[in-house]
Amino acid sequence: MLFFSGVNLKVYIQASGPASVTVSPKKEGQPEVESSTVKVGPSGYYYQGVWQALGGTTVRQFNAAAISQCLKGKVVHMHGDSTVRQFFEFLDATLPGLRVFDLHGVANTGPFIALDYANNILMKFRFHAPPIHSVHSISTREFRYIANEIDEIIGGTNIVVVFDIWAHFGTYPMQIYIQRLQSIHRAVVRLLDRAPGTLVVIRTGAPRELTLYYGLINSDWQSLQCYKVLRTMFKGLNVHLIDAWEMVLAHHLPHNIHPPPPIIENMINVLLSYTCPQMGG
Image (cartoon, rainbow, N blue to C red):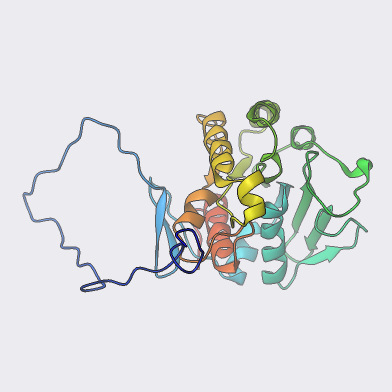
C-alpha cells in the first residue's frame, strides 16, 4: 500500500495553515548574506503557470504573431527524438501560415518539413539514428546521425539548431550515450567555428511516468545520469539549454515522457527567448 499511486504516491498534501507565503522586501541597509559555498539550486520555477528562469535568462511570452515575427527569415533545424518533435508539432499548430509538406515519412519519426512562405520560415525535423525504440518500420535510408546533420549546416545568424537525445538510450550502457554526445559535441564545435552566429539550443531529458514496465527497464535514475552527462559535455560551449528536467519536475502536472501542452508552451517560450531576446508578447 505504501507504493500505490493515488494512495501515497503523487498525493497532494493539504496545508495545515495558510496556503500562501508573504515575502517582504529587503529592509534598507540590511546586509547581504554571503556564503563561502557555491549556490546549487533549481534553474527556475513556475509563477502563475509561467516559467521563470533563474541565472540571468529572461523568458518572454510569445503569442502566434510574436512567434512569426521572431522566426521570420530563419531556418530551424530540429533533430532528436519525439520529445523535440513536440516543438515542431506545437509550432505547426500555432503558426497559421506554416504548412507541412508530405514527405511520405514514417508516422512519428518523419522526416518532416514545414514552410511559412509569407514570413520566409523553414522548419525541419529529423529523428536521430539508432538506437530507436519504435513500433513502426523505418527505412535505414532515413537514418541520420545528429553529428552528420550538423556538419551539413552552413550556419549563420538566421539558423537555429535545436536537438535532444536521451530517451532511447535508457537501456544502453552510459558509455554508448557518452560516445554519441562526444561526436555531437565535435560537430557543434565545428559549426560554431565556421559560423559563430548560429544559435544552438539543446533540450535536456526529463522525468517520465514510471509504470511497472518503465520502472524496471528505463527508470528516472538512468535519465538523470543522461541529464548530468549532457550538461557536463556541453558546458563552456556557446550553446543554450532548455532545462526540461527542471521544467517538468517543477510543474504540478504528472510526469510524462511527452510533457503536456502547458509545459511545451513554456519550453517554446524559452527557445524563442534565446532566439529573439528583445521580443515577446
